[in-house]
Length: 326
Image (cartoon, rainbow, N blue to C red; front, side, top):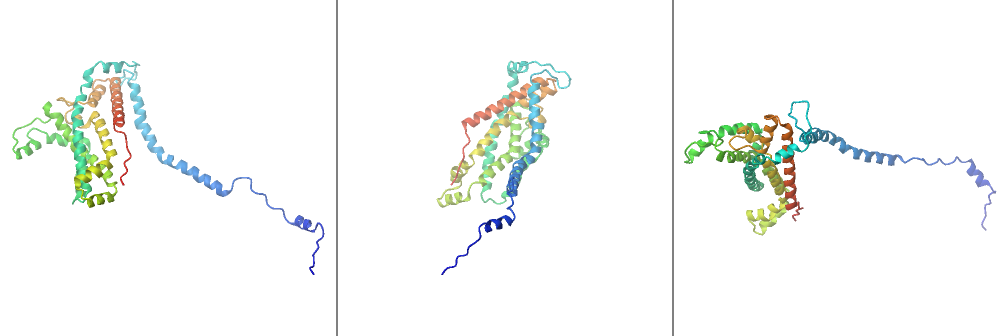
């Protein structure tokens, strides 16, 4: 027989009334959610804090001067007078009606040809030194060292090197070439000599770019090629060259833009004499020798637009491709 316990009506209700009421849920977000929002906000702001200083320097020393240069190109400012008059496009009209100002671009052809030699030499050394060559770190340092030397120092060193009956003539006599040569005084020899200095100075930079790209190629590709009996030339042709194609394209872009903007070496070694004047040297003379800062600024703008246009054409003709070697 089962006993059924009976409760009085309202007893349970009285018990619940005597218990403390439950605490209400907080109205705002939970502490964990607030912490997550704070972390996301900090993560979004932190990169801009690191970029603030370089962006400020880039704006102050690059974009603002370029904007001022563009503005000066529409004035007749002489560089010293507090007054400058707005002349509109007269400076650009003057440049267009004086074709002799653009004849100096012919000098850039020597440096453009030298830059192709420079790229070929750098690619050769980068390929050789990427394999197990003895003393390769020593050769890397020797090849890259000229790029670290200040351009003014390079100019003065090669002034003595190219002197008549100097170092170069002495070396040539050792191999049976007699006579004194005006390496910097003869218009037929001056530009090739200066272009040779540029090759010596910048080959190391291109070599480092190529070497870094070659080292990013997966090593198992070389092992597979060796198992298939491929020699060094075949490895270069089918593995290295396709793998570093973007870097080679970049080197050609830098070569063209650099050949148009040559200044340091010819200015120090010849001052633009004997047919070695480049477009940049001519622009500097317009500004500081003839006090035509407005015309020189317009000339610099033309050079900037020309370099950007050539770079755009190169990128259109040789589009960037993602190379995946597997």
